[in-house]
Amino acid sequence: MDWRKGKDFGASPEEEVTRAEEAPLYNQLPEDKKQYALFMDGSCCIMGKQRRWKAAVWSPTRQVTETAEGEGESSQFAEVKAIQLALDIAS
Image 1 (cartoon, one colour):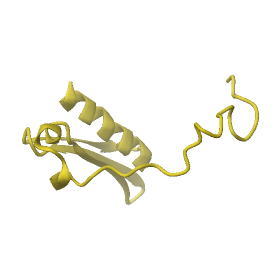
Image 2 (image 1 turned 180 degrees about the vertical axis):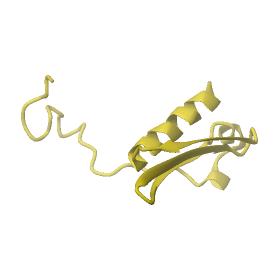
Image 3 (image 1 turned 90 degrees about the vertical axis):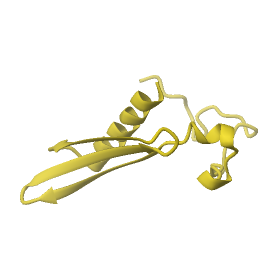
């Protein structure tokens, strides 16, 4: 990989982000923005000796729910799977 040198990865002080801005609550969004809201989550649990994961996405305006589940992956995998499901709904 071609990583930038130094602790700041080459970012100038003006570009440095110290804190991410939180999004507004869903019920505080303007009506024209609510159509783009998607709620998603992914998780994993151990049942016996096997890991099981599940991912879910919900669109309140489109009334669409998508889920996926499987075995042998991590919670991080489930979170990324939820993002993939959200992108499928959004497209």
